[in-house]
Image (cartoon, rainbow, N blue to C red; front, side, top):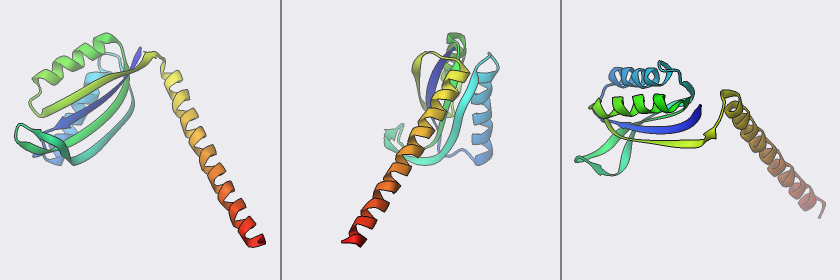
Length: 134
């Protein structure tokens, strides 16, 4: 399976219920043919970088998933016929990966961030102690 990163922009005038149903539909497009969702987040209404069809705002949805090329083809076909999706971008994240490999990579990233934060705090503490000693 391959890992993919997808961002979709929905029409801004959708209500919360319609947006949630559309998100559930997108998730089912991934999981029904055998894909796995790694991460998903609704980013809400935001201003677009440039107008699309005279619209300046859109409802953003971000999802990362594992899937075969068949999952990707199915998803692209459904996106093309869904009128509430204004724009989408799907990018392959890496070469062939298993769900365990992706999970391990995410855990390592969080561990590195924690170590960096601890190192920054230690450096600040040492600087404060040095200033107090002088």
